Length: 254
Image (cartoon, rainbow, N blue to C red; front, side):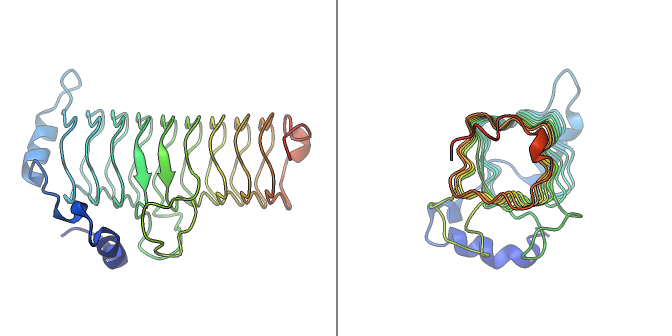
């Protein structure tokens, strides 16, 4: 059974009236599973450009698989292992990613809009997905990724600002990275307008040239982070930690 949990209604509502509601996957779950079982390190499973929308792929091991430009819209990817996968330009909009692992995956240019990341309405650390060291350069991200592991991830020039393409559901009006681990992450030039980063670990992160207008960094750890040229108009910086060790905070654009 596709484990949409309490978010089934939200996903269905978001797709109502959209052509996405009639998507038909290219492959069955059985065919996907067989391809993964037959894969070898030298010949990884290749789903590049394939339509896997809506499939229950929970718990499957896709590690190292090729999924460039694949359509994973509304698919259940919970507990899946996508470590080291090629997901360049892939669509993960409205996908269920509870406890999914995307460590070291290439998600450059991918779309991660309104993914379901917890079984409740608030982020849950025990269910948060992992994107450690993942390449999210230029990705479009609009999701509640509170408590997610994004340490050393590459998010240069990624767009995480307010989304206007889909209905406002589950009180998600802006990207939520509160409590997430972004230690050593590259956010240079990223669009972080209005993003929730409260109590996030940004130690050693590169935020040079990032747009943080209206973002919430309350309680965030900025130790050794680089904010040179960052835009901080209306940014909430209450009780930030490590501000004295931050680089370029005094020269950031107000």
